[in-house]
Image: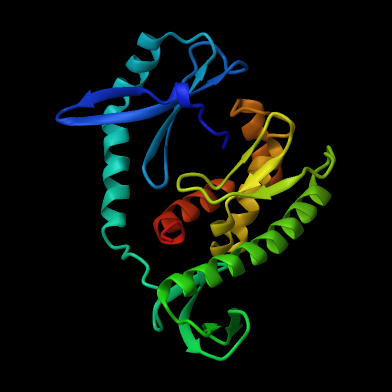
Length: 250
């Protein structure tokens, strides 16, 4: 889940009347001739290619799978049509750890806005119930919960790994198209909105990034690590992809 560098993003092909734009991640350890194509939520196309793959070679590989890419992009667009923009008002559905709650905005004479889970409701108490203030309070709450949930998830996952990497530094960064990333220096960056997802999906993202501490690529060795420690990671990823539009809709 490495960030795509800006200079790698100016790629596109034509498929019928559609222009398919994609980003390329250069991976020095990827075998020559091995090119992988991913369609990631909420509809970003990413191509993993060897460091020495030429532009014509990459374009030819994407053209060969253009129909498959087109169908996946169309699927993302269809799902997105059913996602309504957030209004931050009472009665709206919100998510936390894979469960849906009803938002309840309560005008109250309080020094500082507060957010609390109460049964099947997420209650926001504030002297100013305006949507902008409710949104700010909720985002602060999500970030606080994300930091605690992710920290525990990282500790639990590290205890399971046989190769025992040192605990990496972790930071939160809101992102529209990524759940997380791992820098070459070994720092994990996680999307705070991921805390809305089920715990098993959160664990999948955490393991993905921790495996990058050993294999900073998407090579066969990387996926063997994923399979060893989480044989069900593909199902978890698919579930997370299905929820992406709802979770990332801020």
